[in-house]
Image 1 (cartoon, rainbow, N blue to C red):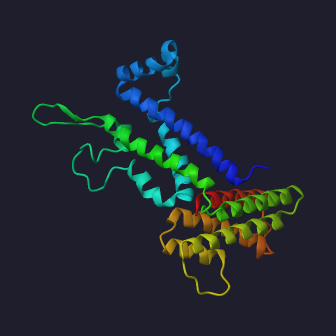
Image 2: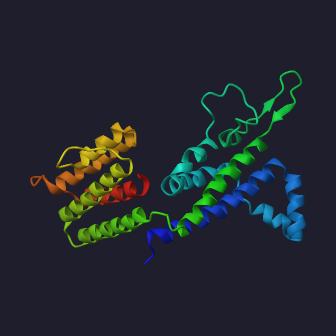
Image 3: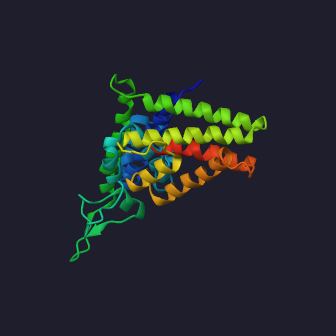
Length: 269
């Protein structure tokens, strides 16, 4: 059975491979002749085949970034701000220069010229060091898996949650819809409790509920309003399964609950 650790390693290898392809694509898009010459020195007659196999940076980068940022957020959170900064344009920026050019600019094809003679002073190639930094951050995750100080508790807990959600799905198959929803609700509550502990959110109430954890995470700015509403929606379904004996939960509702809880456990840390 593959564990979450195995899946993380596989995902990381895929992200690094695709990241390397994107870097090559970016270099080719910026300096095609120079890039082809460098490749030709290594691959000779296979140069054209290699170039044609490269992805289009603007078409593929956003999906790569979306996957990469989740991995950084969970496994290398102290580098998250740096990772995001390479992509997002600074809010305080008044003009474009090499130091504040970002990947977001590259995706829009922006460049800067001198006003008096229209000579280009900042070209899209200024984004290459930005992407190199992002790729370096992703590569830095690898050694953490082998480090003796790497805390695997969250990964182990995630494995347990996955198993319990699989059990909940099985309960639906056997007709135990309400029980399946109740089990998914337990997973959600335990995960939110764990997230609150990670962020050192102090809760003084004795008998805490999912809503208590959800509200505290929102008030502490750990989650935004849309995520808070999504969790509240899951809570409403869970309450039907656990408390409201006058309303019978539907199979679709409980399936939505299980899928939603799975999403939360994999994206909220």
